[in-house]
Structure formats: C-alpha cells, structure tokens
Image (cartoon, rainbow, N blue to C red; front, side, top):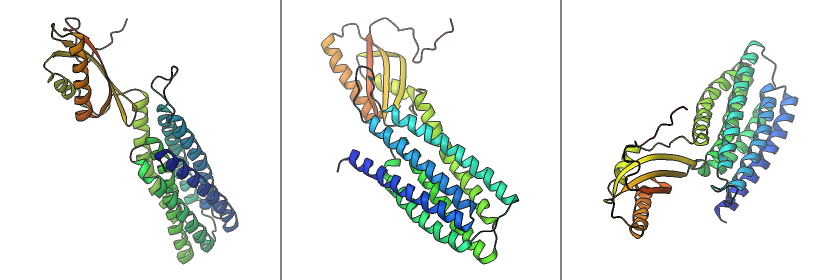
Length: 297
C-alpha cells in the first residue's frame, strides 16, 4: 500500500475506534455516575470530528496545483492543524475548569465500573495513538490529530488511576487533580502546533540563517550580490525562496541557466529549500539590502 492509502486507512480505523470509545464511555459514565467518563466521552466525540477534518484536509492537500491554486492545496492540512489545535486548547481549558469545579463539588462514583470502562478506553486510545505516531513526526495536520489521541490516552490513564483511589480510599478528588496536571502538559504541546501553523500561514521565515544563505549563494563566482530575499513555507516540508541576484556583466542567458541549476542544488543540499526563484540583474539593485523593508506610504 502506498503512503496515501496507509494514511487514509489509519484515519478510518482511528475514527471507528473513537466512535466506539465514545459510546462505551458515555454509557459507562451514566451507569457509574462518573462525570469524568461522561466528559471524556464528549471529548472523544469531538476528536472523531477532528479526525474527519484531518483526513479531509489530508485528501485535499494531495490534489495537484492548477491555475486557481498555483501552489497546490498543501495549506489545507496546515489550516486543519490550526483549527484542531485551537479546539484542543479550548477543550483542555474546559477540562481544567471542570476539574476545579469537581474539586469543590465531589460526587459518588462506582469505582469498579469506572476502572473497567477506562481500561477499554485506554486500550483503544493507545492503539489510535500508535497508528498516527509515525505520521505525526513530519506532518503538522497528523500531529494535531495525534495530540488529540494522546490527550484521550492520558485522560484514560488519569481516570484509571483515579478509579484505583476511589475503590481503595474513596478519594474522588484524585481524578480532577490528575486531569489538571495532564492539561498543563497538553497546553504546552498544543501551543507548539498553534505557533508553527500560524507562522506558516503568516508566511514567516523558517528557521534558516539568511546570512548563511546569502554567503552560500555568493560562492557562485558569477553572482556578486543578493538582495530582496523572501523565504517562506507552503507547509512544514516545503520551503520556498525568492531573491534578486546581481551577476557579472558578461554573463549570457545560456550561462544563467547553468547558474540557476547550481544555486537550486546548493540551496536544496545545504538548507533543504525545495523551490527557488531567482531574478538576475546586472547593476539594478546593487544598493539594495538583503531584506528590503517596505516603507509606509
């Protein structure tokens, strides 16, 4: 199976597992009286919707570029990652609010049923998380969905640990305390994805030393100056560069073709810049800087 089919299959199975977990936890929460299980059920329901959004974005992102979308549809996955991460932040904050509420208003809980249902949820969430683990390392969209699965897995662990204390000591306050600790870590992880997606959507420069880029380009003997440089990302794997270069006066069109190829290979090998657009000039722009600041009109 190719990568697209594998990704699609995994998204499908993760969605099915989440729907089954949602039903199981909701029924178990109602019967046991565990607000934690009911909250986790609604959380899983939202996660199922997030997975659908991620998968749809994954399919759209593989579409070829056309006259309307000359850069293609890769940003669809970045948008999905941004939306899912924001939703995760909101849900995590709601978990914290609910946890403080439950600390002040403890409820009677059937600890044994709570434990059984949490173990079922833990197994299913852990499997879902493993299915998305490899893809999350190189794709922000899948990473955002992976974080949702990780949230559910940690929540299930928290519910399981809390059920032990409920059974042994009737300490119902353990569940919200564990939830708060998990939420603090998840907020940090979600913030990272939000920050990265906003940077890409705002076309911020990736973590590349532009002075080093300039120095590398100037190693080509025919190039005497680099200016008006723009570097941005289409997604987390595709870096684009646009720049003006001043070349020696006796450089002809045929020589420029070879020069462009050398710069393309140089920037790809040293900085992983996947698309380079160069505008060759002779004397024009010699007084301009590497980054030209737009002045207010």
